Length: 378
Image (cartoon, rainbow, N blue to C red; front, side):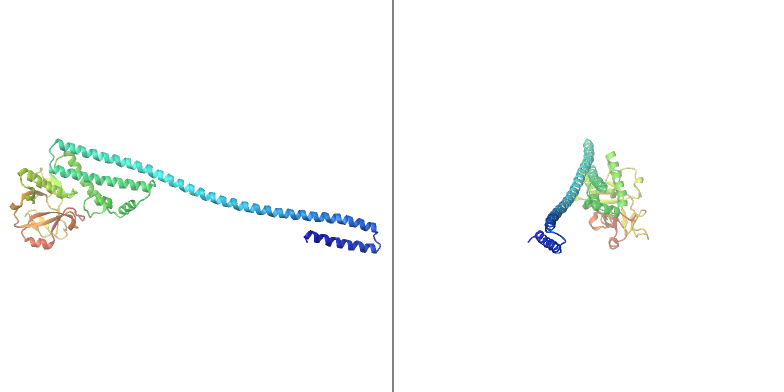
């Protein structure tokens, strides 16, 4: 039985009982009881209809509230998804802008480097044309190779620094090479990409840069005069062996000697600096920039002597480098002194210079006497 039927039955039974009791007591007539029963039935039916309507309203309100809650959850979920999509789109746009910026920066950098490379190639062609107009000697070939290596080094320095500058500005992503360059600059070390194109050196970055400028200045003076310097700073060459080979080649051509039968001979002058040399020699070449380790050179006596206290690397006077046939070399009172590019010695060996000595050569061998081209502590 439904709830409305139960309510109706209970209401009718109560109303009938009350009316019948009043009829028995004589307070109401039968006609009045029937009238009241009719009115009560109508009123009761109206109340039940009102109750049913309210129940239906509450049910619909509950359904509507459920629908609204479901729709709200759906809208919130859609909003979150749209926000995530918007964030992803924003991230992709930022990446796209960064990629375009890197492309533009890379194109600009590539164009600039290409222009620098073209300028270097143009300068190289000009030098070669000037050499072709005159007589191209072994000396000029050696210096031309030095210019090529210096140009490659300067190009790499400019390229890497320009790339690092773009990375620090945010135009490019910072790569491992950039980080390595930054660490080297911070630690006052020569970056690996520069050192691989340069000469052997133990100098820190600041001193290395000054040394590089001096080397570049010597090459610039040569390209201006297009003639072998009267005194060559041999320490400022990438490949000093090539210059010494050029000395032997010139001597071999001049005297028509076989090149494989020649050896390098040195004569230490009494000139302490290149400014004291009046002009270039006709036989061989003057060089300077050598330092003695483990001994000293006695300018007055013209021989090796014991080192003076606190003079670790006394400089050598200007040295004349010549070539002579091996069978005519005099080994008496000569110490075959090894020449190295740096204090590291071993892998930087250049050649053997025969220095005059009054003492036995064994003494200087045991003392570890050597000539060094590039000394850091000077």
